[in-house]
Length: 185
Image (tube, rainbow, N blue to C red; front, side, top):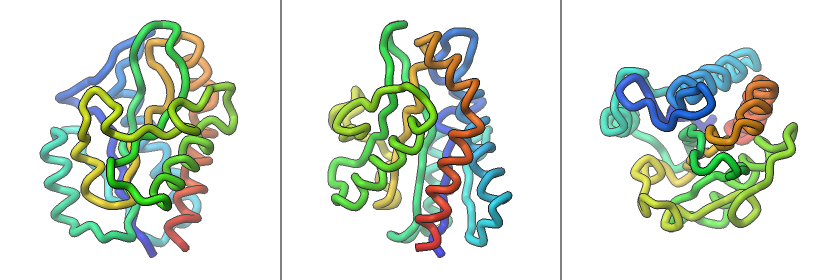
């Protein structure tokens, strides 16, 4: 059984983006906790390794590394995009040297997220190579081959964040179902 690493992309020391009355850190922590709760409710028998709200990204990477990640494990880092109020869509970012299987993993995550929404898939079918992001290299993606950085929707888009709030529990459940299926394969 594969282990699942889940990271709320922002935490108590880095609130991330702020928009439409929301802090990215609050949303990502809620998403992490919601996905974990769904996995546990589905009797996931594997290990779930989550970050701490008090740790920096560097601390989280060190903690995850201390758990000796294996190539078969899964890792998702949770985020919300921010730009203009008109920017929209969902994207999942993958590491530059990702295999086709990892790209498919990321594409399926994106499709799972938009399943119950009217959001568009950004990039190539919902996925974006890390070198196309402003940071060019995202350290969290280099711990485990099956890593994905999820940008659920735009915190800066009032309509998207409102719809997210209405369907978030469905998104958490759908992601848990998909991760459970992969972890058991």
